[in-house]
Length: 130
Image (tube, rainbow, N blue to C red; front, top):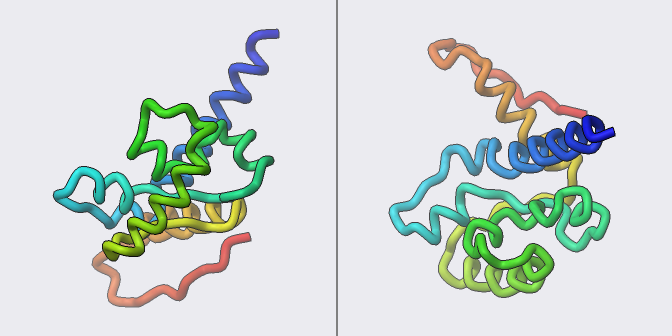
């Protein structure tokens, strides 16, 4: 009986962390300022969706989680409002998509791009996933 819950939790954790970080925008971003770096290398998804919040354990607020790792996830939605405003004010990219489907699409597009030969002279067209 313990195998199934652990397997489910492990899969959900892996999925939620990968789609939050392994996208074109996040992987190719960095900043020497620690706080800016935390923002530009993460992505939020499904903001405002209780279903997404529950399935991800609050990891859908990945930007806020990286900025405030010791804050309980129940407070991250409230922090996100202010963080978004601060990022807009200072011109810092704040990566956010609608939900799981959009997050998966960005992740898969990036993964497919990683499989392409960089020395290839042909440019590939953006493939639509799902």
